[in-house]
Length: 193
Image (tube, rainbow, N blue to C red):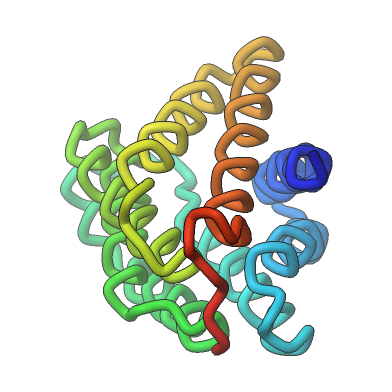
């Protein structure tokens, strides 16, 4: 199955993108996000894809916090969240995503940072907006959102096994996303942006 091979590469690339982000290597992170976005948004120009990938890498960089003894409230209300949202809005404009995605993704990052369970609602909402923009349907939102949530949980373990399991879940996530996007039998076709 062609989608499975592409999905495996996308899972490798998305993991590399997040790992490079953790290493504060924004350019390498953007490079790997570009590779993933090219597969998800084949109708969008390479220039817009690169712009979106760079904006996402910048948003993730701004969302990282150096723990200087700040209170939870100070971390949640920090002025940098405006920069995160603005970068995510730039990504939305480049990929043709709804602006609500930027708001939900920002809230996911904010609440995930402090370990608040509220991040679950926001990651599911953000992923629904993201995947609906690709597939044109919300029929698979709960499946894809659940996989994305599980991947974040695996990554948060910060162990080799957690990362390997998360990568396998992302392969499944991307396989489902690619099949639902391009499978004629489902009556779903990619939209032009």
